[in-house]
Image (cartoon, rainbow, N blue to C red; front, side, top):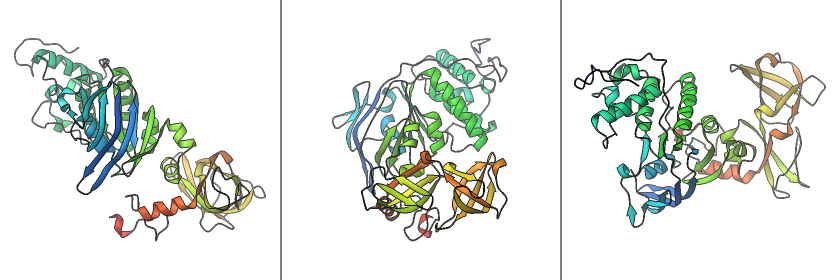
Length: 402
């Protein structure tokens, strides 16, 4: 622990530690957080529509969905920054927001980490972290803040100011400030969105390690499916203010509720088909209908990683149109007779065939999902707030998406 050399001159009295020295985050008493039938109505529409979620003590839950689906609104209601229009919020069974009761944010024991870090530029890094420790003496607050800074590896910057820090370091300071009061519930609003991809990956792992140490109940808001799958004990998928599906990441990946959920977790090839005798027949093969009604139009979704490239004469005849290097993998564009659009396959870079070569294509049946085609049409008409347009192919943005 950093120590005082003397009682006065707090900024000058701090002994520096090497950047690599880290302690352990203080353990909190995790609380159960429950949303019961929560709705939130704004002047421009319904942001949350009868949301019910139960987050167990010590659990990390990721709220996943596109911009405008209600994720941040739900977080603000949990923190007490927003009031629900109806429904209740409970902490360990005690109502903190409801029709007849409202507990202010400062009395909830809930920590909130903002997307933009919200550090005070005129305060030292130490004072930024100690800012929320109003119930402690100055000495106690300083020591708790130093412990949190030590855990995130930034104690040597205690006397400095936020402007000297990189984006990743500012994120660590914001995390230290959030964990310093040892909240029973920690709420994080897209905490890694401003970081570059390499730094984002490292900060995810460091943050998750700290969350495990503190054992606080945590909700992380994100629109990044990979981030949600890596961080969350469970994932709640939101769309237009409603909870579409909740469960472990693997369950949502393997058994998505609808085609929109499938698109969230996978890069898909989508092939039209009709269900006959319980089978969706395509030029790539015949696949079980998986509950889609007999005679219905369907969409057969094949994950790009489920497309196997075979030797000529094996599988379905095909030709390589293009290949794009993506790092460890390559995205191969393949022409298959009978398909209106090219098939996309993600393969190891070393397995990429030459452009123009004739190959065979096989399909991993475990990478195939079948949905009713009407769901795709309904999704296109609705727009989903992500630039979809019923007049254009999926993935092509129209002028309305600006």
